Amino acid sequence: MEDNVLNLGGVSFGSRLFTGTGKFSSNQLIPHMLAASGSQMITVALRRIDLSSPTENILAYIPDNVTLLPNTSGARSADEAVRVARIAREAGCGNFIKIEVITDMKYLMPDNLETLKATELLAKEGFIVLPYVLPDLPLAKRLEAAGAAAVMPLGAPIGTNRGLETKAMIALLIENCNVPIIVDAGIGRPSQAAEAMEMGADAVLVNTAIATATDPVAMGEAFALAVRAGRMAYLAEVAGESPLARASSPLTGFLN
Amino acid sequence: MSFYNIIEKHQDFNFREFFKQVTATDIERVLLKEKLTSLDFLTLLSEKAAEYLEPMAQKAQRLTVQYFGRTIQLFIPLYISNYCSNECIYCGFNLKNGIKRRKLSIKEIEVEAQAIAQTGVQHLLLLTGEAQQVTPVSYLVEAVECLKRYFASVSIEIFPMETEEYLTLKHAGVDGLTLFQEVYDQNIYKTVHLAGRKSDYLYRLNSPERGAQAGFRNVNLGSLLGLAEPRSEVFFTGLHGRYLEDTYPQTEVAFSLPRFNPAEGDFSPSFYVDDKTFVQFLCAFRLFLPRAGITVSTRESASFRDNLIGLGVTRFSAGSCTGVGGYASHDSSETPQFEITDQRSVEEVTRAVVAHGYQPVYKDWDRIQ
Image 1: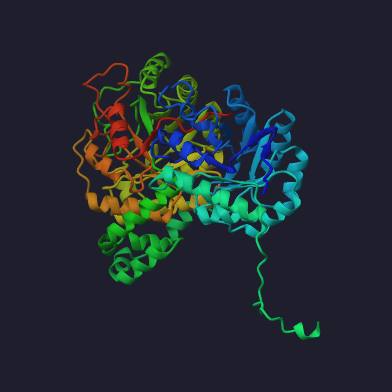
Image 2 (image 1 turned 90 degrees about the vertical axis):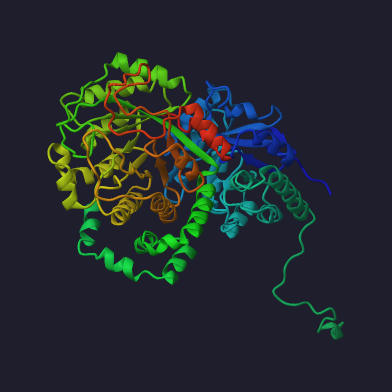
C-alpha cells in the first residue's frame, strides 16, 4: 500500500509524528527521543531559546536533520505572535512557525480570532504557517484561504492527556480541508495518536505525553509505532462499524 | 466587585467549626475530584487532611508534571533601595529600624545587573521598600530600562500602585508583579502595619487586581505565614488567586509561601508553620489551582527546598541577596529585608535541581513589546 509523503510548505516529512521540546527533565533526552521516535519536526518555544548560553541553548540539542518548528507560546495577541515569529526567523530558526495565541491562562485555550489574524499576516510575509486552533470548520477554511500550510486542531486542552475529545469536529476538518490536518494537544497515549491517524489526520504533535513519561525515549518510540499503525489502518481503509450485528446468513437471503 | 467582596462574604465564617467537622470521607471525596470548590480547598487545609499528606503529594506531583513538566524556573531578586516609610513590625526595612539606608544609582544597578547576568539566569525580580519620594516611578522606569538590557524578564516586588503607574512600568518592560498581602486577617493587619501607606489594607488588597488590569502577564500572591492563623490565611490567598484567574483570564496567577524567618527587629511571629504543614499547604494550592505557578524562596533551607522539588513548586529564587545590591560587591554590614537560609549559588541550586531529575530553566520569556 502506497502512502504519499507529507508535505508542508514544500518540505517533505517521512514521519507523521511531530514532537516538542518542553517539559523534559533534561534537554539531553531530546536527541535520544528524536532518534527513537524518528520524528523529523520538533516544536520549540522561542521564549525558551537562549542563544547567548551554550548549555541553556535548547537548539544545540536538536540534530540538523530535524526541522525546527518555532512556536509563539506566550503571545496573547496576533500582534505579539507576529513579532515572535519575526524574532524567530531573525534568530535563524527557519521559515516554519506554529502560531499559538493563548488569551485564557486558566484552560490555555487558543484564541481562534487572533490566530487567524496572525496567520493572514505571516503567510504574506512568506512564513510556513501552522496555526494551533480549536477545531472549527469555517475558521479552518479561512485559515486555508489565508495561506496556512496546515491546520492544527487540539484534541483536548493542552497538557491534559485526555485524547480526542473534539473528535467529531476534527473529522469535519479532515473531510473538508485541503491542507494537512495535524492533531495537536491533548494526546496522552499512543492509542489516542493511533486513533487520530486512523480517522485520517495527516500527522499528530505530541509533547507532554512523551516528555513527562518515566522513559521519554521509549515513549517516543511507542508513539512512532502507534502513528505508523494508525496511518496504515487509514490507508487500508478501516472497515466501517455497524450499530447492528450482521448475521452471517442474511435474514432476507431467501428472496434471492 | 473586588476580592474584598469575597473576604466580606466569609466575615462570619467559623473556620474552627468547619475544620472540626471535616471527616476522612470528605478528604477522600475531594482527592477524587478534578475541579475543587473553595470549600474543597479548605477541606485540604484542615488538620484532618494532614493524615492524607502522601496521596495529596502524589496528586500534586502528577498535576505539576502534567502542566509544568519536570522543570524548575530560576530567578534572582535585586533590591535597589531599602528606604521605607512603613512601620511593619516584622520587616527589616521598618522605618523605625536604625539601619543604613541606601538606594542604588542607575549606574550601580547596571553593575549589579552585569554581575547577576554572569549566572545565566534570565529572570530578574526587582525590589524596593516603600518610599515614593526616594524611588518614584521615573526612577523605577529608568531601573527597568537598564535591567531589561541584561534580562529576558523583569518582574517587580515594590509598593502598591495605581493602574496608570503599573501601566507605565509595563510599557517600560516589566512583565510580572509580585505583591504579598502579608495578612488577609484585617484585625491583625492593623496591628502589624502601624504606619505608612501600607497600613491601608484595602489599597494593598486591590493592587494585584490593578496589576492584572494593567496587563502584567503574571501576578504572584502570598501571605507571610506566621502573622495570623495560617490555614485561613492560605485559604484567602488561594481564593484571591482564583478570583484573579476568573476575572482576568489573560493573567497567570502564581503563589508564594513565605514562611516567617527572623529579620532585623526581634519580631516573634504568633504562629509557626512546621514543615509538614507547609507541604500540606503547598499541595493544597496545587490541587486547588493546577496551573498556578508556585514559588519557594531562599527563606527556606537548601535541603527542605530540594525535597520540595516534585511536590508542586515551579519556581526557585537562587543565589539571592536580600540587602541592597550585593551581587557586584558584598557589604556584610548590610541589613537584609529577611534572613536567607539557602545560601547556595545559582550553580549549586542548578546541580541540586538536576540531581532531583528536574531541568532548571534559566529563560522562559522574551520581551516582545
